[in-house]
Length: 151
Figure 1: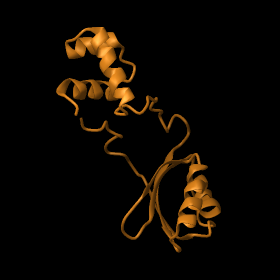
Figure 2: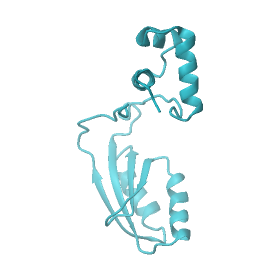
Figure 3: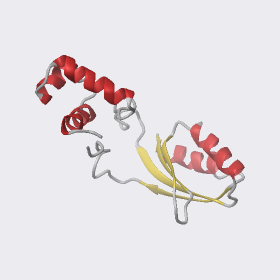
């Protein structure tokens, strides 16, 4: 179970993963060594799975963000594993989920332009033998950036 101090520590690290033990100690009203031990415990228990930088897609030339729904025509372990391997190899696919409902998968993709998105869909995803249907939605604007998880 997480106590309130753990939740505050996790919230602080989600907003800035560069916080030192001293920074955390000031926010949590405890010694730097206590804050550091709490962080290590939360890392060891898997509450903190890693640290990463958030990059600006536009500055990297990735001006097209889209969500791609994929429906398989055949559903079996081999087809699912084969499709998962294909998606894992595509750097444009930044997230992938399995779903209930009409679509079997939802992919979040970033591409440099519409031509690259078209190529990803028509040259890579649709030719997969298990894929029956693909539907894409191009993001016009993101109203809320990827937010930290509630703690």
